[in-house]
Length: 121
Image 1 (cartoon, helix red, strand yellow):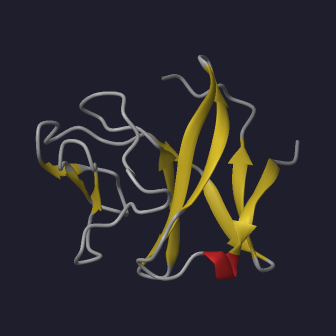
Image 2: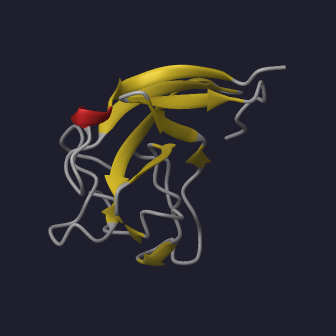
């Protein structure tokens, strides 16, 4: 069976280490905020919630990177996450991870992949 995919945004909407694009995914708890960013030329997507407490990372829509552009950061707790893995390297949730989502970039678009599995949160 072919893997279903859903368009999140156009590739050009994701500048390197710039503003991310927010979207929503269905989880076992209903619609849940998520985001996608570009880091080192690759798109990375996660549920938009801190691993410490269930708050959204960005206080201003799309602002997921710290000032250096090297880490994703929780605007509430200051937790710093590695963009490629979602692994927390500093803050109250050190050692935990963001929930990663499967995405691909092709034909000028960024797509959420749906493996017909429910995302458990």
